[in-house]
Length: 154
Image (cartoon, rainbow, N blue to C red):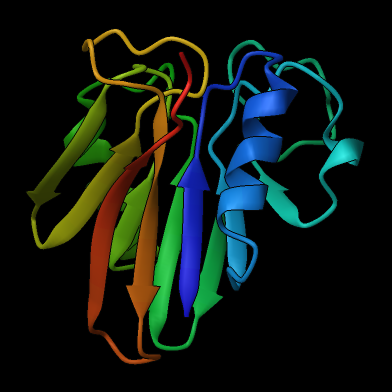
């Protein structure tokens, strides 16, 4: 199974479309908030609300199952002690992975046995890395790999 995770597109729908075209055979597409436009253009993408989103129907978090792999997704804003709190929330929901956005910096850390991933931004990365997203691949068990991919924007 292939899961594509993106975040913080801030109205750059063409970058979301670029990701979908680069990864047409994914089993799931996740967007961790701050889409800043209508989500109706992307019916195959699961969205959560970011601090810049205006759609009141977007959830603040979601739990997504991919075989035995459960992913907790949220934007990650307004959280005190973000990494520990995200790990705690994931454990409470039986998740092995957290995906989040907000910081516009790609991260990959493990806290209390929970892997916490931020794909960076599809608009502006604050850590100087190119715009990009991550791909999580799993064989349906607890085993998985994470790969960082980039949009080749000039």
